[in-house]
Length: 163
Length: 119
Figure: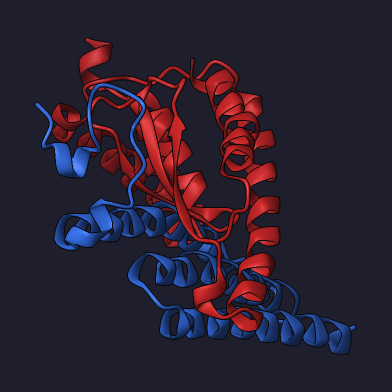
């Protein structure tokens, strides 16, 4: 019964919070309307969310977010430097393959999103069986080191959070 | 006090405008599609981020209102930017036949999802 009413408790909480933030004031009316939306939207869209990701280390998410934010800051400066002071043709641009240890779809999506937002890399595609990620690097002299960094810095932490 | 806050807000706006400009410049300058994708996905996140922080500081310190809309904008930006970049890259791989030869192997039995079709 409860599982039918609340197929995704976290999603309900998230939608309610987003609604209150959108209203920009924590009045009772905003919270109630947010709760109604938070109950209806997950119930209506439940068919699109077949799996329910388990989060094993909620606190590790904060550490992960801090690291990603810091990397975004650094990568912005690096990419700005590459764009401003280097000729486009002289960049050592290439694709690399990142073999995945992650199996949870949500974790892989988080990793792909992180890669796109951080140092000179864009995740371009996933292999058809979901075991490798195609990453486009703006400038890398050592593809293996880039892959090792991604796996060590991001994937290892996501594995702790999701698996 | 107000002068200090105004200086911080102005500084943040200038930094944000600079990174947005660099992102757009990269979009125009870089030579090919995949490299161009790097400009808007990255240089702009810090640009928008600085502008949003400037907005939050401005409303909190000078108007006395706490605004959380900026946090939501950040959240939506971080959710949508990678997805649209990913879709652009996939569309490019599908349409530009020359790009396919440059892709590394997946290291597994299946090819890349865009080209392999999957089953």
